[in-house]
Each structure stands twice: as structure tokens, then as C-alpha cells.
Length: 220
Image (cartoon, rainbow, N blue to C red; front, side, top):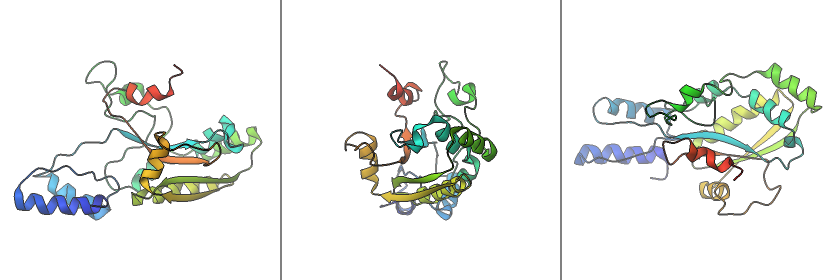
């Protein structure tokens, strides 16, 4: 199917007719579809969390975003618990880059639980405003680009836009073809220096080791 909703309907129909086992991603599925999947899970379905963190990547060549205090202020203004409530499923607030399900140095120990929270799951608007005052920034205009393949992304980013509005920022949310965004993110299509202010996409791990997500930030 074209999206998670269509994939699930095909999965449900074929499972009932053939008793075969299928895999389907529910990322971006609507609430009714996810609830139907929960009903099936009681007897027929096994679910596993995806090793991914939905991220906003800032272009530090942008004058507004070049100051780390501004970037931190924008992060502080985001209520991650509220964002998770907008998404059907078992999304957890990202309190660090590494998601739940990644092993720590010792097997069977969860990296995220062991390492603890790096950022708060709740917003702190006053702390964000204090950082902006320190940086001498009163707001500005920004543009974020995301994939149009999953309907919830625009919903989440519009919520971020509302939060940043309290800080004086106007965030324009644009969605493009999923392959365009991911090809940009993976280096298959070249970025021009100031082509985008913010890019939104899932940072996914292909292994259960934290190194799989951290190696791209290594200096060597």
C-alpha cells in the first residue's frame, strides 16, 4: 500500500484469508488503524518498536541558528510528551538521541535507561526565553522540510511551530516527497549551503548497538 493505513488493511485481509505471516510498519498509521492492530495483537500479532528517533536537524550556516543558545532555546520550547500524544501508537518522548531498545555496553541493559535523560520531555518556555535574551535574539522566520509520506509529521511540526511562536519565531512547515528528504539526508542528493533551515526526519539505527547512530558524529 501507499501508506501505513493501506498496508495494514492488506495485512489484515490476507492474514484472515491465508493465515500467512506478514510484516507491516504502523509508523504514521491513523488512530483507528492502530487500535485495530491492538485488537489483533491479542491473538495474532507481535509488535516491536522501531529503533529510531525523530529529529530536527538545524542548518548552522543560518545566521539565526548559528548560535548554540538559540538552538537550545528552540529545543527547550518543545513538549515532547505532547508531541507523542499526537501520534498513534507507542511513541516515547525522545530524552536523548539514542532510543529505547538499544543495548548498553553490557547485553540486556538498555542504553537509554542506563544513560538517563539528556533533555527533558516537558517544555521549559521561561528557560528558552532566558537563553534567547542572553543571545540577543527576539525571534525570526524559519522553514522546516519534512517528508509527505506520513501524515503525522506535519501535525507534529505544526505543534512545534505553535510552541516556537511563543518565542517570536514563525516556522513555515513544508512537506516534500519522502525519497527527496531521505536522499538529501543520506547524501545521495547534494545540499546547497543554505537550501534549508531545518530538516525533519527519523534517525534510524540498523543495529542494536549505540555506535550505529553515533558514528556519524565522530570526528574521525
